[in-house]
Length: 425
Image (tube, rainbow, N blue to C red; front, side):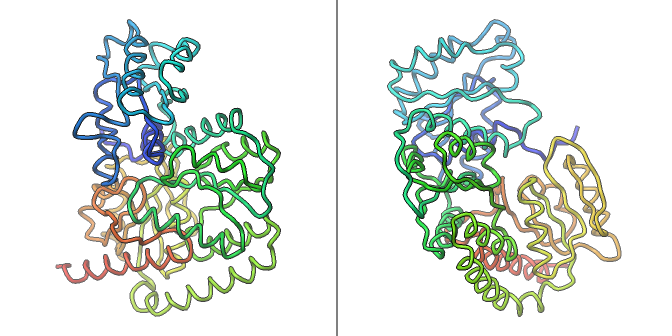
């Protein structure tokens, strides 16, 4: 049976925990769940401490045998929560079912609530691991639970004019590329003379999330789920949703919509046009010399896939195939571009090989480390983007988001194409 390209809910939960450095997570999971932690730490994120050599992990598994699940694991879960709180001293401790455990039992959260005083920290439960939910849904679930917590417990303040918070930034690792994304978002907000209180999530500690109480406007990004609306409705704040600022047109749209939402429409339109023109002029020589007319494929989640497709089209590529990580299967053809959802590694491998062997060929693939396995025989240039990235790591702050992110991504694409041309037999 071929491995599915879609990554599960629990991976998204762990990525969110990874983005909150003083948080911890206990998962009522069998021993095999350890592999999921290792996908993040150390393979995807070299700066992660979800798993530590001294055993003082931020994500801990109950590690029951499957046959034990029918007898109940709540006592072991309670012991693990207490041990994690004692060893880690987290500001917030999350508890979650694995998919297997949820088939056999359900927690009595009232009994777990009795642990709170003994734990000496905030304890927040998460829904069990639905087997048909994705990474992005797991990530959003953590944000939604945090939103409910702060909406219920944070001291409400009078919002400060011109202050905003961004909810739903996909901070999947603590390396320099994500730090650069954070700085680019801050730069775009500052262009409009606005004050950014907090970004959910950006690697900041738990208490930094509470700065959202000062925000006049709550802005939801694609990975927010319902978190932004929970805060906005509870506190009566201005709220709007913005697209992923990935690409020239998307970044321009993002800045204009932000300006409209915050009462800076004319200023935003002018600045967005200036940024777009400047970025396009910088990219034009590279696009004309290296990218124009080349064939490409995109493999990503439902948020990044369409955005990355538009980026490549802006750079002059012809995108022939798009593979969306999903648990639901779908296939369609849009103006000669094949769009698949729910493929396995073997299925994607077949589609990519067919494309590579066609008359037009295949020059470039954007995708994660999972899709790289399917692409290894295509002899196309490969650029790792998104989750997981086990080969590409970042020690220099090169963003993907915003206007500067387009330049950074174009640099990586050019380097990959150049290497392919030099080594191609």
